[in-house]
Length: 87
Image 1 (tube, rainbow, N blue to C red):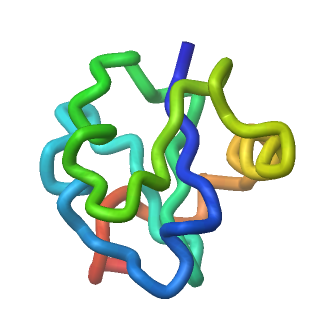
Image 2: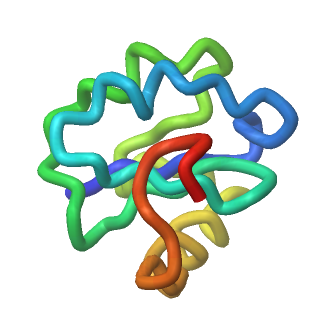
């Protein structure tokens, strides 16, 4: 299982989740952050840090936000570095 960042991150982009990620698997997509499912180790450290409750385990993402799971899985992470303010 991995974690998925959903729409409530848009407009907020609080970096608390990025700062606690032990494997640097959270990327700045532009309007919100994405968790690379290939790199996520399922530690859950990001979830309680999100002030807008935008992060869900992939099997608990609300049905109307499932496209964020697909977006994270299909995103090309090769052109950017993980984290914030460095891309």
